[in-house]
Length: 281
Image 1 (cartoon, one colour):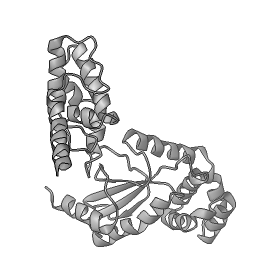
Image 2 (cartoon, helix red, strand yellow):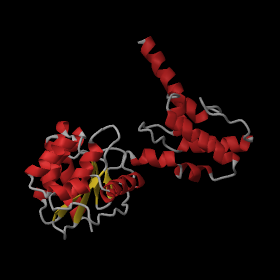
Image 3 (cartoon, helix red, strand yellow):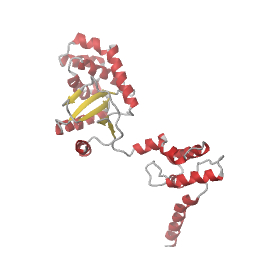
Image 4 (cartoon, helix red, strand yellow):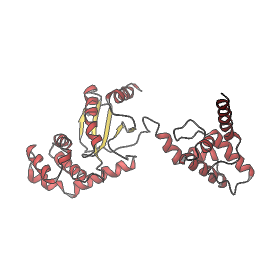
């Protein structure tokens, strides 16, 4: 009992220490006047750390000194004070603070996405446009297919799906597959080729792609000419560049009316989000 009482008192003292400490682990206050240092400490004691813990920035520095988020933001606070800036506003505008805060949001702010000429399924008059940035060799993209199809079946008049290319460098045949899907798209066969490529993702290579194109009834001279053509390659590059611009970092990445969705795609989680989007004015 004595030991438990001692540990309780010690933890209580530790919890209070960050509120009064004049120095914080990993934070260099050199060059600040006493007044500026006090100002920095006040802000760090009041702003929460966006790393996912329930602590304030100063508390996180004391109780979790290995946290890179609180260390980086504390350094930004010192730099803002030295530059004569508003410390609180500087931290709130920090890319690190914004990025960390965004990790906890289900939907990010809407961005403009160019879908002209991109393959699409569903009603052209749908109230919701889903834009998927995907990779034909990505195992997670393969799993996402049934979930996105379920969304189209559940909301046949209100949801449409637009496919955008985002082949990853780690998948050796993904770019060729992207080109093949767009070459098939020129003949109105994007979705049949899309399905075949995902069904045979482990067998994607040039010879098999040509065989699949024949099986799908494509005009082979036109398909072969388009497969490695400059316009097709440029279209893949444009999709990748657009994905980079709007924050696509992996596949599949799905946007709901321009808002990046950061939750699971299984129907139990995804369909209620679409329902809310449809019922929100």
